Image (cartoon, rainbow, N blue to C red):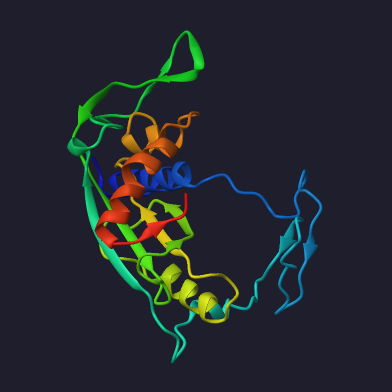
Length: 219
């Protein structure tokens, strides 16, 4: 094979790989686009609006994202839940390869899965204003950190609480069980049309948060 042909093939394959990997996109004002309003530079949508807006290319970053000097900072703690110690999602699932299309139903994938044990990290933010022994409201976010905590949302909560725009609230960030979609624990948790994951949070996660972080959560 000549050097020219080899170079041509490499470039062709690289181009095709890039083209295949690119997600489908469309212009925001293309055919079929819903009605929308283009915001002026520095303008933000009303807080109570339920419409479509175009922001940018110039936009104002939310000031709540920045740490503010003098604002009390909450405490962030992390602990791990071992699937072998839970009643729900014990064991978990995983796959070795992506599923194949069911020849009898092209809308369905056939996925070969196997059981696994796994560990899930829980990251908890407790505001500085929390009074031990009292019940506190809480919020749950998914796909939480699997390593070091991401301090973006805790710092936003610090600022909002200090400004008395929200009450002192506990943040519980739950890492997924691993993998991505069909055939993986993450897909079983997020894509399953049932209340099982909500039950897992209520019966497996929240009691452990109260125990490990010494807090009381509203029920």
